[in-house]
Length: 400
Image (tube, rainbow, N blue to C red; front, side, top):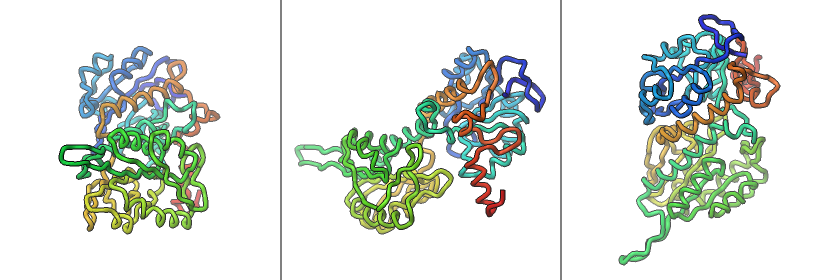
């Protein structure tokens, strides 16, 4: 249990409330803030003390005055916000320099990406920080309100559809005009998870004809319920993984999938890809040959660009053009482009998690609880998250 314990590395269970700190995000392109004034007010009402770094919410549209009105104290810098804090809530994982300001025994909540960068987890353990990763929360019914991956993926799927419409030199809807009829654009969405389903819904609302593909046949009904056609490809195995996630296909199945998709990709004006595997490079689904089959002016929006991209020609962080005139959008961190609402949803996810974990004014971590076990990465100087331990062992050549 982690309670308020000023100036010491050991927890003091006698005090009743926590000091929560929210820093300004410093990762390149990150405009979100971890807590918004609405949620800050709820924590203050619960008796907690909130320290918000000056300007933390400015890029998302939340002023220091709004935080002060909600009951928070504005700190001049991150170190001042972190001073004596029991809990630091952020969006992106901290750098080593930022970690230096966090005292031993404190807890850290954010998108820590333990599988994508397992070595960073060692630093949390070395510093005695209890690390809770928002991208490791189990996708169960019980944890649904805490599922920040889903809330942010929803925004990413929406933004991907808008980017596609912006870059496509055609109308999305069918239009009948005095100058003639304009046919609707044809869109293919690859991956029907949260981001893919939102992309389908948004592209459909914009008027395009939509087809979607996923390795999990179980999502076909969801795709059809949104008014899209489900593309069926027999690759000889199912992509259904645990907890509703897609799993990585075998090399043979992936090759069959790529070959079968060339025709569908070539017939599309827009392709939006969403396939990602935690801690792994994104699978290549749109090959160089598939891009070559597309008409000039067509668009690929690659939501997996942050982990290498689903398109073989994606340049992460850039908008590129293929030799045959296809625009390939590999922009990163799309939720940050809608920082106001992305921050609101993320803050609500954080609140749901903390409401679940804070008992009698202290952070209580029951290792036998499924949500706690899935979310807690480090504790008491140890790496306790089994998938992260396995990733570290693999990175060390199998050594424990």
